[in-house]
Amino acid sequence: MSNSTDVRRTDSAAPGVRRGRGRRQKGIAGTTMWFWLFVGPFVIGLLIFSYLPIIWSLVLSFFEAYNTVTPSKFVGLQNYVDMLTDRNFLSSLGTFTIFAIFIVPLTFVLSLALALLVNQVKIAKAFFRSVFFLPTACSYVVASLIWKLSIFNGVRFGLANTVLGWFGIENVAWLSTVDPPWYWIPIITVRLWLQLGFYMILFIAGLQRISPTLYEAAYVDGAKPGWQIFRYITLPQLRATSVSVLILNLIAAYQAFDEFYNLIGNVNYARPPLVYLYGISLGSIQDLGHGSAGALILAVIIMIVTLLQNRIFGFGKAGD
Amino acid sequence: MATAERTSGTLEPIGYTRSPLGRVGVGLRWIALFIAVVLFLLPFYLILRNALSTEADITAPDWTLFPKDLQWGNISELFSNTEVPIARAMYNSAVVGILGTGGQILLASMAGYGLARIPYRHADKVFYAVVATLMIPGAVTFIPSFIVVSSLGWVSTLRGLIIPTLFSGFAAFLFRQYFLNFPKELEEAARVDGAGYFGVFWRIVVPNSLPFFAAIAAITFIGNWNSFLWPLVIGQDSSSWTIQVAMSTFITAQTVNIHELFMAVAVSILPLVLIFAFLQRYLIQGVTQSGIKD
Image 1 (tube, rainbow over the protein chains, first blue to last red):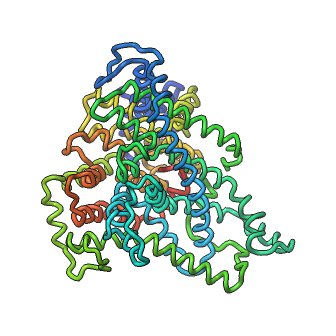
Image 2 (cartoon, rainbow over the protein chains, first blue to last red; image 1 turned 180 degrees about the vertical axis):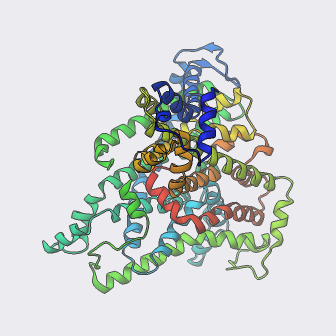
Image 3 (tube, rainbow over the protein chains, first blue to last red; image 1 turned 30 degrees about the vertical axis):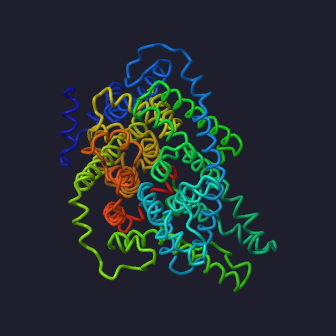
């Protein structure tokens, strides 16, 4: 490293030393050096651990790569063709779609409802907010353990079956019953428990950004409290928050892995894309060629959906 | 940013919140709130109940609300289990959580400051290169990242767990936005006193931004501690398991020891419950300011 850095560093470490105005002036070169001292380490890391992996993966997706990260046999677009005609991969996209149809609207409505409830409470508001936010401290692994072994355990001592038993209902094997697909109940509720508090916080922040004068004006204009106010004041004012909650939620759903892996495992009836790709590329045979192709296909799908969503809802307005 | 700060502190009631249904509405709201509280706390009750019960109590067909004799011995039983190295896993998680968070904050804050404040001809291009990485959905990159990390020989090492996660484009972006709004006068006063960029950053900017650093650090630490997919990919050997991976292997083990498993759960969430107890203000600030941490 150049001498000038060391000098400067020692200077700045000694608060008593004051320097003349003249010495403060630096050339363009000096500023450039400072820029790279601050930004350089980060950018180098980004190149190695963000850009290089993507490029390497792109290259590998055109090759056969079993148990190796070195491209050996060029196969052109074959890996992509294989993945796009792979029944299991396509059905994993189907699993995701069903998952998203449930989880996105439910999260939106319930987290907004929680935010409205908490926001209107006059006493112990911080307590209620904390209770709903607390599950955010738990990991998907932790929550899956509780759900799988204690709540939705398929035998009598599971809490859900215990409660059903009080009403004389037979035990349900929650996670392995395919017809009807009861496994969706644990899968959906575990994510709701974990993430509702997070989105509730976003909605509360959004609610508090609404100017009270709007409500006063609506009152003066004779709007009825309740649904009318909610429909014509609150909801439109929450537009920006709503858009980001929907987008974040959908992107997160695409990347669902933890709860599926821990609750059900790598089985074909409920396997989202990431679990399938994990099985292909890091299972007993490490097929990194097909895995790379699948990951890139999925990345492109997510990006397209995100862009479409931004188009539809207008992300420009969501920025502020 | 300014609005986020204004709203994140105390919660002030918004005007005009009289219930539409009068007293009935108020009553219904309290009932809804009460049910929600019970449902949200239920899993925590199950953790405590199962962690302190005997296996026989848990698996008994009749539900016991709480065990008569609290089985504190479950703790020592858990830590002496040779199949699942819990102590080692807790240590790994602590190292990953602390070094991962510290490193990420250091790198991202310096990069964010440089991008916000140090004039450089190509700064906007560098900024675009950082922002472009936000377009790539995080979890999809586990296969590409595995390729690079395994060619470095970092599989099943703490290096492999930590270093690839240090460079968060999103954190750098947040810090840049924050520093753009940092009062310039403070920095200029220090510069008149002769401090360079390094001195200004460490002696003026950082000490005056501690709440923001705490907010980002809290959500980053929780994210690191709870992260599962990457540690699962990298932790192919039990010596490099994090607590999440260790607990997940517990589930898939041949014989499941429910009481031990729930003791492991209790132990694993303890650090985060402490963070929630003492840093919740920063945490909520972090969530509202970022709004994009999964």
